[in-house]
Image (cartoon, rainbow, N blue to C red; front, side, top):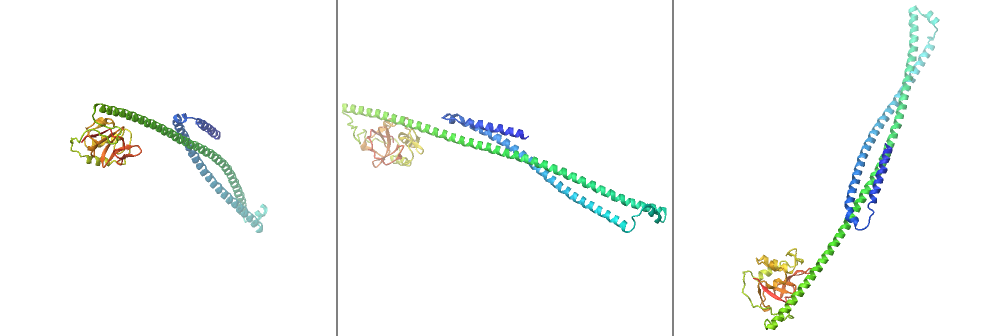
Length: 392
């Protein structure tokens, strides 16, 4: 059994070394492909640990049973030694009694030969009785002494057998304890391998998460750069369109607009309202979301929106659908044109690449930027105004 156990130990340790060696890799592939493999090998190692622990339980049970047998054998040895003591006492007592009877015979003149015993007998029957008594005493002492000697020898032999059995049991116990120690060491080693695998898996996951975060950040930067590039291109197209419109107005003598002015004449007087929604209500509703985040392409007034999304969602609350003009450039054509001199709270103010709602008092409420979020602090003339539109 011990050879099989050592063979199992050697094979198991070799398997652990092979499994451990498979992780000595480098580069990104260890994070891309080996996490699942390590987890599988960790499960296999844990299964092996569980099996070894089950064997350890069986071994401990065997040790307990053997210790109980050793304890019983020790009790038997003690009992046998006590019996041997009693037998020796009985032998000594029997020997002492026999010496007393012999002394009695001599001291009282009963140690006589057969002729004297015959002459001193009152009758032949008395002679026979005396002879029979002497012989029976002798035979009794002889038999008792032989019996006690046999008993003593039997007890001594039993004691020797029990001591041999005790040595054998102690040897088995020592062997089992050695196996237990080896099994404990193997389990501890494998548990260490399982823990090491767990640490490697955790590190691999952390590295994979780090690389995923880096990749997400890279994509976010690329997306932001692309959005900024599209915004610049859109602003350039709007600038060129504004210049072309200004040139056309100059050639036809109309409009008198000044593309370089911060307060241009955007055309239009003070149109009649087409809804019963007041500009003050629009502004009051829009100001509720000041401090919320800015998000490119977002449409949520609470979790994030961009400038055009902000305007569209505010007016959507009042049943005015501007979703068809989701871009800031398209919002320049919604509703009716209003001149800067006639601007009122609730009017939509359009800039190059940006749009806001006039809040009154010379300021606008807007989804300003990713850094500032939704604000209501900038002047309406913070940029060149390209159009002012009224939809209420």
